[in-house]
Amino acid sequence: MPGKRQPTQVLEANGRKHLTEAEKDARRDREVHVPPPDEVAPPKWLPKRLHGEYREIGEILRAAGLYAELDRDVLGQYFLSRERWLRADKRAGAAIRAGDEKLAREWTGIQGTYFKQARSSAEAMGLSVTSRCRIVVPQALQNAAKAPVSCGEDEFTQRLRQRQAAALEGAT
Image 1 (cartoon, rainbow, N blue to C red):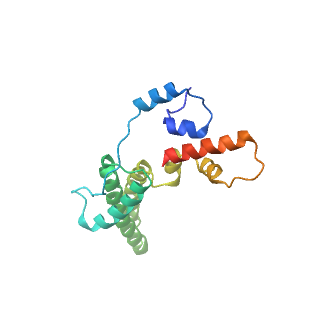
Image 2: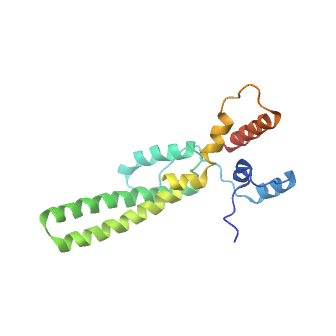
Image 3: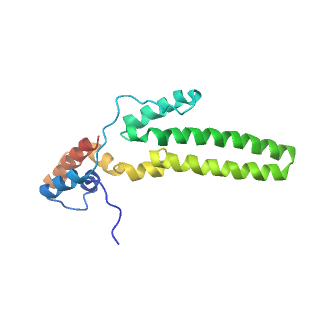
C-alpha cells in the first residue's frame, strides 16, 4: 500500500526517488501553496489575555514556515483548550487535596478532554516534535549539506553536497 503523498521538495531532499524535470513541474503545479501572512493576528473570538502569547508563538511558527492565515483558528483553539485544561487541573488538584473522590474524578475527566483538544490542535500546528518531523525536511540532510567540505573529496561527493545544499536552500 502506498504511503502518504509527500511534497516534491521533500522527495527531492530525501533523494530516494528520481523525477524528471517535467514530473517535478507537474507535481509542483498540483501542490497547494499558501503564502505566509505579513503579521500574525489572533482571531477576534480569542480572549484578550491570550493575544500576547498567540502573537509570540504565531511569529515563531511563521518564521519556521508553519503558519498561514488559514491556521488562525486552529492556533486559537490550542490556546483556549490549554487554558481550560489548566483551570480543570487546578480544580482537580483542589478536589484531590480535599479528599473528594467523586469531584476529583469528574474534574480529571474534564481535564483529560481539554488535554486531548489541546494536543490535537498542537499537533495540527506543528507545536510538537513529532508533528514537526512530519512537516519539515529531516535534520540529517540539512547537516550533510552544511558539513564542511574536506580536501580530496571525489567528484560524486562534491556533486551530492551541491545537490543537498540546493535542496536545503529551496526548503527555506
